[in-house]
Length: 67
Image (cartoon, rainbow, N blue to C red; front, top):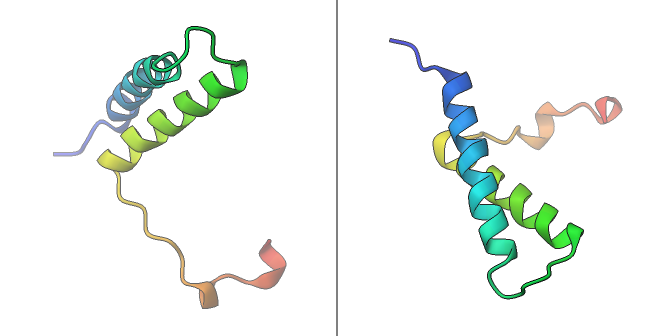
């Protein structure tokens, strides 16, 4: 069995967008564009990070000239 990453990420983005917009309008009736954008971004990233676990690279593995 292999996971369908496209379906998983699609679900994360759809759910994150719905939750982000709802969160942006939670405490104000007229949020700014930046507030909506930040809330949606945070919610989408939270959904993705709940499904996928990312391992940060060790600092010694990063070449200083790659940045």
